[in-house]
Image (cartoon, rainbow, N blue to C red; front, side):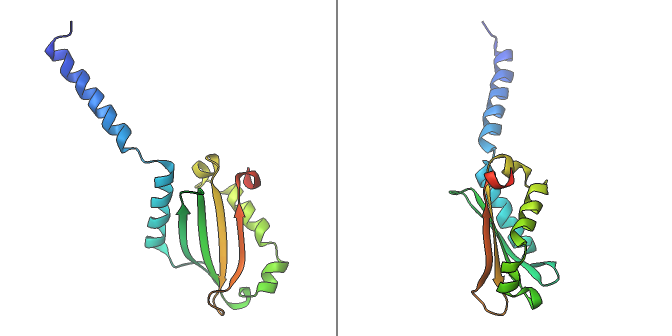
Length: 135
């Protein structure tokens, strides 16, 4: 039979383990939190000349990160985008990204949307990469 002195440390350890497990953040909650924090702290932000990142969001239901950008100047041209290799460049960047490793391993989707600065509300380019695309 255990005495009182050995029961207290055991109960304390079990309580701490239960609290630690309950405080763990799910990957979905983490993704939503990180996307919201990034947008709040950094957006809008210039990525390159004539490319502005407007926001990053996370859809928990579809496990999709969405990155929204606005293009300006000579990049603000749907014909230029259509004839270019934007999708291939984005896919290569996604494959090489180490900061998204956890989400890529979990099989999340990554959506990129580029809007026009000249024609507000106009989407110049949009694509979504699924795990079969980047793995």
